[in-house]
Amino acid sequence: QYGRLPEEVASLFEKRRLDIAVNEPQVASYKEIRNNHVVTFTQAFSETLDGVKLFKLFSDISKDIQLRYSNKQIIAEVPNTARSLQTVIELIERSQEAVKHAN
Image 1 (cartoon, rainbow, N blue to C red):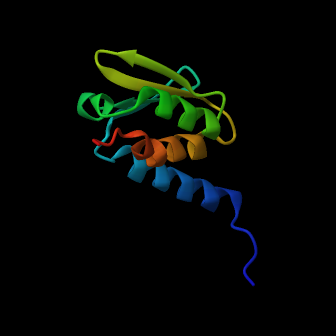
Image 2 (tube, helix red, strand yellow):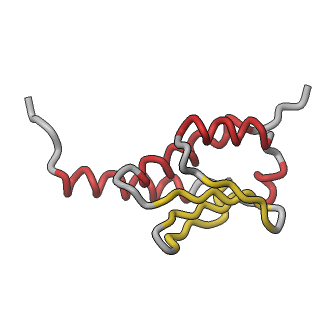
């Protein structure tokens, strides 16, 4: 039918998806620092997470994601690669899956 999107158009779509993802309420900030994409989750969201579940979830997305806990916030770093934007989007979208549920 129409074929594949040109690379420039696909890149614009990815950047728009990233803009939407980083504006999710659980995201405190998003920065690109020294060839890394750094996502900092809010303190309120970080306090609701099951750390083991989050670690496993992010490891399933990419083994290259580094997690830190600083100032009561979870920080995820993704190295800059050809797929890093998709990885950042997926980790933000799927972070909700690690929320602890009260029994």
